[in-house]
Image 1 (cartoon, helix red, strand yellow):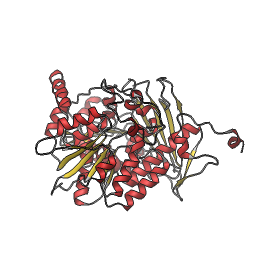
Image 2: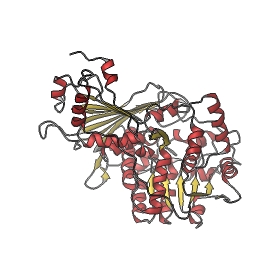
Image 3: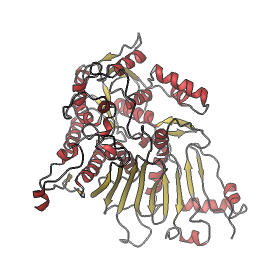
Amino acid sequence: MSWTRRDLLKGLGGLPILGAVWWAGAASVVNRKKKRSEILNQLNISPSLPPAVPGIGGDPVRVGIIGFGIRGEQLCRSLGFATDEWKEEMRLAAEEDPNNKALEDFLSQNKLNVNLAGICDVFDVRAEKALRSFSTPENKIKRYTTYKEMISSGEIDAVVIATPDHWHAPMAIEALNNNVHVYVEKPMTHTVEETYRLKEAAQASKATLQVGHQHRQTLSFRTARDIVEKGTLGHVSLIQTNTNRNDDNGAWNYDIHDQASAQTIDWEQFLGSAPKIPFNKNHFFRWRKWWAYGSGLSGDLLTHDYDRLNCVLNMGIPDAVSASGGIYTHNDGRNVPDVLQVNMEFPRFSTGSSQAKGKEKGMTFCYSASLGNSFGRPTILMGHDATMELGNKLTIWPDVASTRYADMLEAEKMRPNIPIYQYNPAANVPDAISSATSQYFADKGLMWTYIDGVRVDSTFLHMREWLSVIKNGGEVSCGIKEGFDEAISAHMAGLSWKLGRRIEWDSENEMLKPIEGINFDEVLLFNGKWETPTEILEG
């Protein structure tokens, strides 16, 4: 039986409202519709529609921004507030490249019922930039000296926390204790102890907590969840997901502002609980390179990959985590690894099976990262019946040894090297990517999604969901439960790398299994690899 690319192209379906979906497997033009129907009936997949979100009516939500650095500015744009400098930069970029739609997308973004009421940043230049760009005669934005002053002012309903990692939990807990709503960037916490305290504060508060995993709004991930739940892949036993970056920006060597000084930066407030060291511009602008303020690859990038798979599989916290790697590509004084391999074990996990009961059970989640090579490696979910490649689009290939699709494979209605399903919500929509780091996030589905063929900022959708729940009640897609799973899993990876040993989770008691003589938080905050005392090793 012959099967050509021309047959495949003729077998393409029309464009549904969410983008391009197509099925391979038609052997000829004559029986194309029949074969396609057979495959569709077997797969029973349809693209997931965006969730309905109740309107954000009534009085505007008074929002305060804590941290106005790179991510803080991005979050403000998702709320509808862009700096004058960014708008001019994007206008010029669009003149050079008509496919650069960043400014057009921002200007066409739906307005949220938000009053940007306050800014808090320890760097005077950033705070003044926000005041200059966002203050109007009708809406005077107030600068707060400290986060506690902002939260206790009575003039703020909700805060957006976009600070270094070591400040996430203290600020979120303070806000929740005062019933102020919280949108906090990942990782949710910096230590294990903080993770439990933040969970207690969120459960006791009347306020809503949303963790900034905006990919939960990406339509390809919602569709992937439906695919897995319907058993399309069979038992998924292995996941491979990766970080591939190879430039200074991707390795957290951000620009150092020429106006940065001990006079323009409140250094003591920046340090907070971190070790007291003299003023250091490198540490201030590139804090992700040190455990004292950040969480390394495990907290900064693994968290993205873990949560975007957790939102598809709902796998929860792994039973055990093993990590390895080192500082191999950027020996510049950092103490977090720039190459990292993490294996998360889920021995009791199952996505269902098409084989004999009891034959299949358990899964390994493999995360591989390098900040010294940008060769793209896709996220792959490997099942007994099919394999899924997942990003801003998704593709499914049948497995040659599949039980579920055996008859179709035998009849050559399916071919192992030909996708049987592909969903691309970005069909025929050109995207301009401004940097290698932006391309990395775009490919993973972390920057935008597409609704009715229109590109929409995923962070905008995530913040809109949070604001809607604040106004109307309901549940956010990434609240304290999801944040707790993310934080504990990331901490397990960090601990495993630092200790050079397997870290285990006690699911019955909801705690890390203790290691004699080891204080987990002391290890996490230690600047570098942990050297276990000889007496403990011998004991």
